[in-house]
Image (cartoon, rainbow over all chains, first blue to last red; front, side, top):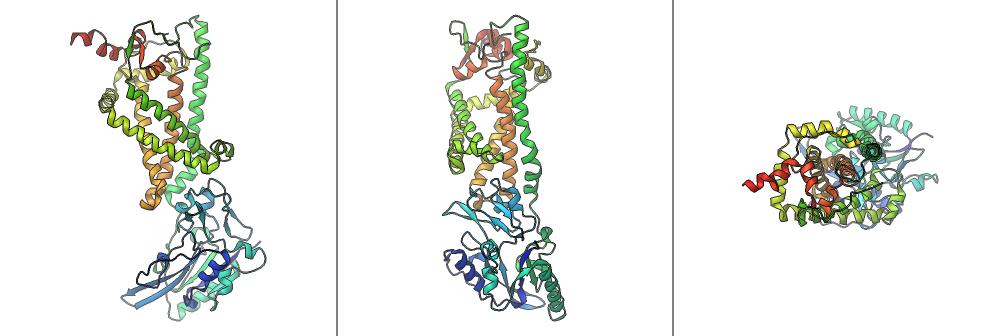
Length: 267
Length: 227
């Protein structure tokens, strides 16, 4: 089955936060109320245990372009090769046939390995349940033939849902159009990053201006741990146990041969 | 077939470990093993039965953390309460010399039960010196990386990520040493008497002289009396 994905076009987003509300509504997530911090940004521009998606408000000043105000919908990227799935000791993560990275809270034990393996640190710890939670790409809706809640509610069609290859072609057209019409650094995000993301972005500027890693990588410590330490290093323990077992037998055979097994502990 | 050499109260015995050393040793043993088996439930794949012993993964998690805190307390008690012994231990490790290297070269034969002539050893022989270096170092790393993973939000993310492989490497090294240490300190016919040194505090005088001649001479032998 072809991958189904979201295409998010930054240039069409009005930051109405309808997607955030629709997400909370469908997934029955409680509001996370935070004090006013002096700008429009909420939740520090990051997801949390009860907020699967968030719209970032990025204010700044550029020496050439002057003052800017950028918006970005941020959530799980549903990587085609997810690091969270690799590190999870309980196999709580799975990939659906159409590309969503699904986290099963029934299997989760709240160890948070996935949080720190994720290059975006998206899986978040939900303290009240002692479990991890994150965007599901509305698996429950898509499997029934519906579109994800965020894409369905978007009034400006900044969010679209459909076949990844078709949306990728559309995104390239759009980026080309934007580059020719006042956004020379317009680019696509999610086509090649981390071997491909199952969330596509059309950005009006380079990814770092939106707080996205330009070249996201699974942290080296995590790869070292998962590829070398976990599978091979533990064999030292059975080797030590086996050596002791061999010694247990040979010492006694040799002692019997020499006819001295009275003063155990004094050869 | 004898598992552990019999405890003989009617022969001359010399003290090897004081009460606090023995108390913290066995406190550490219990908490280490609890931490090990609850931790292996996560380290190994498909061992639900192991977690089930502790009441599932949540139970194993709780036992792991309680044991870890008690283990930390035990280590602190040893370091503070037994500071003189700790310094003497470190000094003995630092005496690593030719006799220890010879011991380590001959040890594989002794381990399998062949009779070898081992050069005189200090309080801790070459192998024990190695264990004394590797295991405490690994335990310190286990404790530090463990608390980092327990409270990830107050540490930099890079450090938390580094704590995972460190915790695993230290666990494997410590467990490997503990397997050997546990066997050599009990069922190995050549060194089984040392079990009583850690359980009752004393070992047979002739065993001490035979296995740790340098230590025996300096502590209980002619050299100590001459001083």
